[in-house]
Image 1 (cartoon, rainbow, N blue to C red):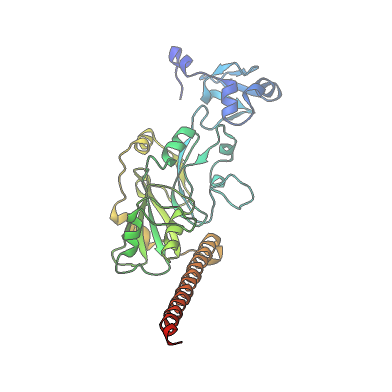
Image 2 (cartoon, rainbow, N blue to C red):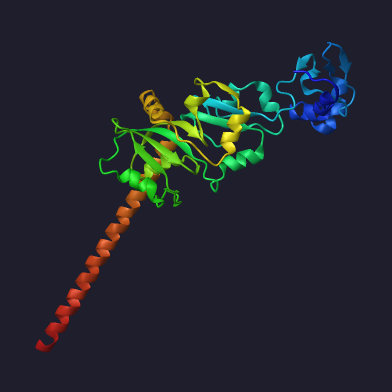
Length: 330
């Protein structure tokens, strides 16, 4: 991409900004960086102009560092990925393979930091967005905005025929183990597979779906996000593990308040191919179930204590009543 004349001047950016944005150095270190490294710009005719100061203005796509162009120079990145199961959404380097390992290595150097918008846990798959724009991240993650997200869920056991799970999700009174109350959500059972359903959330708590089902006695064996803020995974044309830049139109859909649900056919196709998770890797699920069992056990103990106390109170009352009746006979 090349522009000429006054229009080219409007596209020029200071070298210190470009180097800082790409993660090569801080802005204040740009002058020394340019002296230590081969930093230059290549004009449309192929001529090289060495850069000696961070204040120099160049066209972003013409800047070279040690002969290499900077990927997406001068751009704020907004990405979409079809996250595969088995990778984690973290910048930490001690938790195994991450979603950032699926992106170009230079992306991890960029400033501001490229971060995922919300998270999918290690064994979950599906639609995942990344951005360098902190305000966009906050907007789409904010519970107040109620950004709609849809998931295909596989369960270890079938849903009840009474619809109690759907009613609990929709009630706005479903309580998690930690005592927090979930906002109303929509649970739609699969037409023929009673252990598969679609869940629509407008908030994003830590491991929320697993914890909601755990509160109802269900174990989740698969999570696949198919829709986020009006964009659907099938409509984005990404295979598992693939990523690309978001278009301006897709960004507009994400930031729009209107959000379109995924088509039922997409849900059925995804459910058919949803793999079960390996229980030994589900540390979160085991922990949740343990907490749930402890909570149930604690309630049983409390109920037994109340029953024993009631029996003792009744015995004391009966003894007092019989003693009062026998008193005149003495």
